[in-house]
Length: 473
Image (cartoon, rainbow, N blue to C red; front, side, top):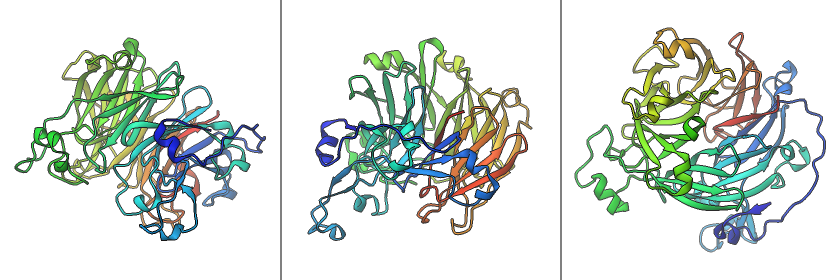
């Protein structure tokens, strides 16, 4: 394992470097790789085992739980870490919240808290920590002997900002771009997108998005965007706060190869989606951010259609009022690149029949053929299936299914579905979620997209798991 950047190297001096072969495993796959969030690991699940009725409602389908953060020196026990007296190093807490799997067998895990110490994250506000991107070898995660180790980790990079969430890897596997979603010590205040050169193994550039002009709520006196930019002490520490809306706080990222390559970022803070010329961004040009598409409120997750013609975005919630959203936005890529004001072609109600229902759509995914979008509605406790052609055409009945998911016993009172991934054959949607701070409360549900029924449930999947990906056919 190689730890990248001087800052992480200094903290991870005690981490061993591993080189080894991969043992064969008796697993059929495909495999879900789920970010555990408050459990700082990636949980690997054999979906063929999850579909076995004998394993329903158990953790039997879990193959391994892979660490994503290095060991770091313990804080001086005299200061605050009395429970670590006599301990030289301890695992960094981390908050893995996103994972993608481009071609090549490497998964890229966004670590929201980077190299934070447990005492810091356990203080109650898991925000504003230096971010990290962990690269793991998927084949090694399937080896049960690597359980709870760093052996599958190839590299860890700093992301050039705080509290990251979104990541894309360019089609040539040369660069990773990471959206830093928070400010230093704050939940608000982010303008940075880090550019990591995966061949030179280093962070090479930090792009700075344009500031916003204020949100949808009147800001308090003395808290204009210009004043907050000059005085970081004025930046809201946590949401909700009426003074949100000056910083983009980009979360999800999605890529389309159209017109030479464009990236779209879901800007939760400014209620819009940035259109980014990737070639210009990688070259360091100043005009890399070309346009912004306004959406209903607080976009968080974004996904590109398989043909790259559409972007689907969850309008999750407002950081100014804490009011949850209930729409997804569909953006026409060609119109957005052309800077047309009508680039948002549909605002689709999901998870509820009430336009003010607050279903809190968290993330989404297109099916491999691009015909449907599956949306996890966090507060509604259900999953929407959208017919894309009907949605683009304005059909009011384009939500063709709404599937309820239930929290297993001892997993909290609400299911809280968040992550969505679709199997390569388009048959199943894997949904991750669970109530926060519930021991072993994370859950993975498998929904059959032919019958719109939950056909398998895996328990013990992290603590408030966020997003996931699927490896294998």
